[in-house]
Image 1 (cartoon, rainbow, N blue to C red):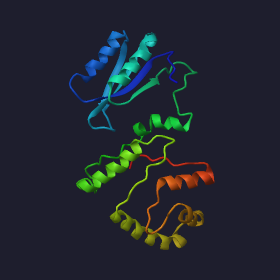
Image 2: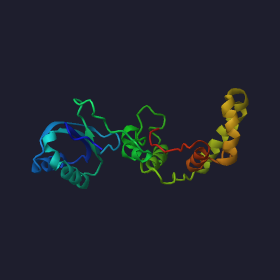
Image 3: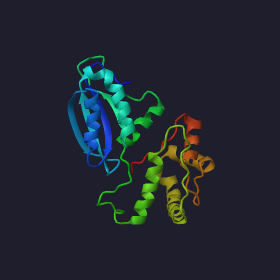
Length: 222
């Protein structure tokens, strides 16, 4: 939970449109919340949105919950409450304490992955970009506890996988480390690693968890 003894900060995103920020600022004015700092930047997650970082006077703490609730109802993006009180030694910034907490910020820290830089080989390939966005969206909408979405791969994708798989498998005995060569047969046996099949992350995650206790999480950053 955010500690509210000192300065309080919020990060929220808004769709780029006339009057959007003014509408939000009126919420703070109505609740008599004093803003001491505000800055903005284009969202890295959605090119049609802007992200705003604001500091508020801690004396406005009583109205903060109402403002945050109103923001969540009126904004199209995310709203995160932070603590910026660095003056107290016992102030501890928020950090994930449970694996489900990753849902709160995974897509803000990791690049969304749907967009490409102009120097990327697939930048001018509309088919590749559309397919890339499909994968990114699956990961972006994932929440902990859900089965990892199953991907239906195309025949072309399976064929490409098969060529790479076959070639690499011939190199493993001489080029892969001992640990990899010991584990790879298990991936073939339990996770569907085959020349004619692209393994699903859910199957790999279940196998990993049964062996080690760890599990996989899809991420959109590529």
